[in-house]
Amino acid sequence: MSKTDNKDRVELQNEVNEGQETNNQIVKKDSLMSMLTGISQNQLDQLTKRNQQFMFDIDRQLASSKLSDEKKQLIYQEMVPTLIEGQNHGQTYRHIYGTPSQTTALILEKEEDSSNLTTKSPDWQIALDGGLMLGSIFTLITGVGLLGRSQNQVGFMMGLLTIVINYFLAGIAMLYTSKALPNLEAPKGKKGYLRYFLISTVAMLIWVVFVMGSQAILPAVINPILPPVAYIIIAILTFLLRYYLKRKYTIVGGLF
Image (cartoon, rainbow, N blue to C red; front, side):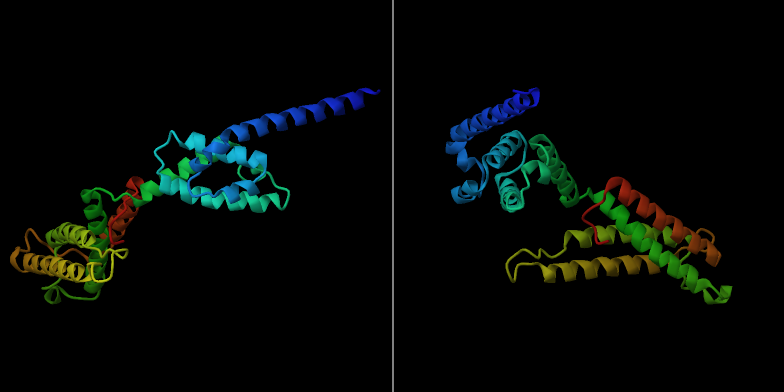
């Protein structure tokens, strides 16, 4: 008998032994079928032994995580049909997902990213984000509105200090408005549209009244009208600052 034949026989025996070991592991874990939340026995029976073991390994590794049963159920209900479909095309779990450790790490990473996107940011970040965004818009409008106008025509345009007040109050208005956003998942009649309308309207009115009032009351010596280009530059810089801070802090929960 050649060395090649001996090598083939050894490899074949190793595969048989590995298959027997896997079968034993699955038999021991048959009683743990309920661990795979939301997966029926019929679905498990459609999986190959190796794919069954893969799913049990995933569940075992996720058991030590903070992942809820509801989220694990959604994950398993997506993975099992995918594995079954892959089997029909000769694909193993490694072809589809990689090793159990790699798959678990990817699941937890996605969950962390998703959690970061759904966790509302602190109030000061939401106010800062909204104030910079809305303030930038109105500062730009002020700059553009001043273009081509004489000093005699700028009585109701916002001065420098009024612009600062505008940014501050815009942030406060955006914060309270964001807190009153309707709950689209609530039952009909309890979504909070009326509350949102009232709070947002009052917040905007207070903002406009104080901004216009400051322009009318504050003397020009502390509230000067700047050249149009200065307002446009301020608007661009504060908008870029808002973009930078939003990315840095991953601000979530505002209106923009």
